[in-house]
Length: 253
Image (cartoon, rainbow, N blue to C red):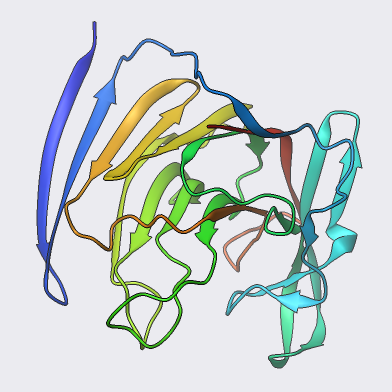
């Protein structure tokens, strides 16, 4: 039997925004349908952008192609202890971790559809997320790359699906809306999101877990998305090595 918990969250922050968050418990699994517009099982990384010799924003992480490995089972993005000084286009500093990251921007971008990723990860700061092609938004000076769509991020040792949205010229985003799916368990899972004209439906192992809807025009965008896969760590991580495994990416029209 399907149980539905319905929550409407009005929040006042830099103006007014209302996001309707609907969570689902006990849903039956579904089979996604639609024409396949992109699929990979990582026999090669030809066409992907490989992050190399760069910092992970302000995090204590240095991205390097040395932390990426292709195996018969798919892609491994590593994160390992490696304290040393680095220099990039945006300056120089010491970082404690080296990690792997790739994205689909050179090979595939798409505005809507169903995005499906099969992966498992150690308890690191690994993430499966999407950004927009840079695009002009009327009323703002800076080009925008949000809404950011997180199929999976690990927050407080739990899998979370999140939308980061709300444009700013002096910052990245105004709002974060999402849902904690379940505690991290280290197993293989299928993470999916359906991109709609008025919101997002998130799935975990083929079961719908969360729907987010808003009439705010900044909540969605018809600009094309590309997918980012990355591993990362911070000072709370006590092991020397953490791996993120990705078996496949599929996008349906």
